[in-house]
Amino acid sequence: MLLKKYFSPDDFVEKYEFIDVEYMNMHNKKVIISDLDNTLISWDSKKDTKELNRWLKKMKRAGFDIIVVSNNNEERVEEFCKQLNLQYVADAKKPLTHGFKKALSKLNRKPEEAIILGDQVLTDVFGAKSLGVMSVLVKPISKTDAFKTRINRFFEGIIVQNLTRRKLFPKMKKVNYKLKFKKEKDGGHIG
Image (cartoon, rainbow, N blue to C red; front, side, top):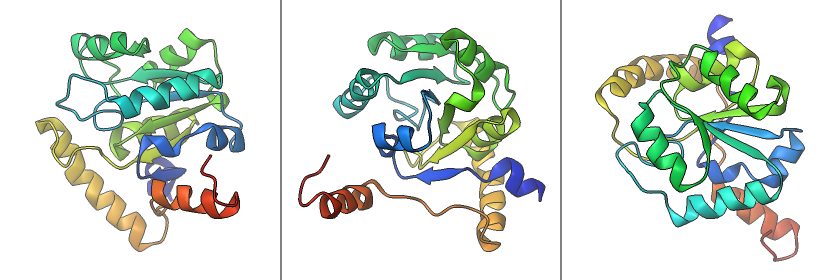
């Protein structure tokens, strides 16, 4: 079925923090190609958060490459990425795969080493699936969107509803569940 092949993510997580060292190692991945708006920060925010900063430092220290690929303009993406010393590709025109390929080229990595993390089925998931890269959908940070994203969300809702009804869309994995599971598994220590 084409809907499942191109629009059902390989994984669906509550927040970018779910992607940790253990997750990357479990999937044998070395690169996170991440969307920016409503994936790492709210679409209307100009500042990073302490939480995001901690996550990025932890992942970089563990040896993972992280690069932002965004459909937003150069000025918006550069301003954010410079604060966090992240490489980026702006004006990516997702779901076309050119931006993702450019990101992989900048890092000298192969598609099979990467995951694509994003909050939209029609841009991030479809683009990842078109390139043959593992796709991880994240719940949008903000409940609001820019105008053109709202149009995508309408069509996305129809696709997700259709796939969910057929049990072809993954259930969202929540961060708190993961931490609770680790706590129980590790005898009271959250790692």
